[in-house]
Image (cartoon, rainbow, N blue to C red; front, top):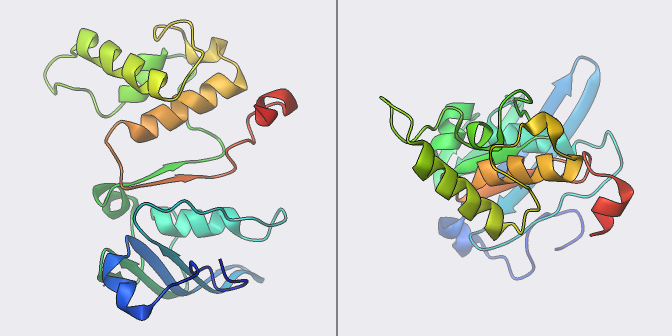
Length: 194
């Protein structure tokens, strides 16, 4: 990446048609704090990106703008060639953008399967528990998860296991973009090193 540009080396304007998501001149203020100043960021298919910086530099704010959780004060968002002033969470999800936030947003009183499928149950009229369990195990195996049972309540899982459940939930609908906000925040030192 070029320093300060957030564009991959070898980027050309002609590649714009290939963009999944692009931020152009994004500004966001919270009262007197100018959190984002003219942020530009391009996400291309098949690429992995890292936002690095000190606490409070705006990483989470950028992610929330891309996911539709925050509306920018200025700028433009281009999603698969279509320009938006801002996205809302429904547009973001419909476009295949999934976000795993720092707080994980898991229901601790529910088991792993219920957390994965909450709001995305396989059948609208009755729950297909067997099919949901099979899909849960498939996702967790893909992530090399060390979870004893998909019927384990989330409250009994470690920070790393909870993080894995949240990531598995984001993979459920085969997203085009997955954003992880502070992915190691819920982990201990030993788990982060793994």
